[in-house]
Image (tube, rainbow, N blue to C red; front, side, top):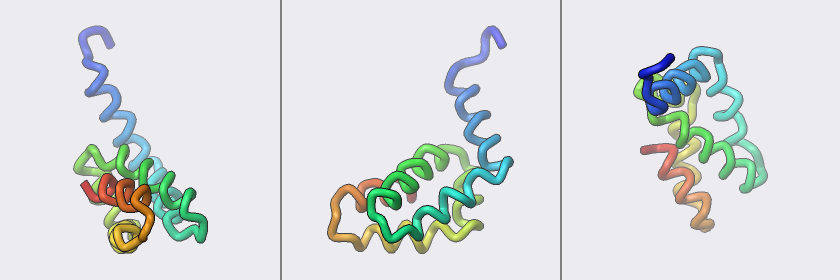
Length: 87
């Protein structure tokens, strides 16, 4: 792996999470009644959404309407994490 950039390796790991069905359980956490759980899930999706493959999987798993719902929250932290997840 010498010569590979850390950025490429990180992207590969994020894609692997998507391929290993790691996105669906995170999207499910957006349905939690606990705002802190929703924020954590949105933050994780924000990290995962850096790859186009994972953006598609987030939408396919139903994450888009849940993140949009979070944008309507009165909590700025929820709004920020949701906006990041939508980026």
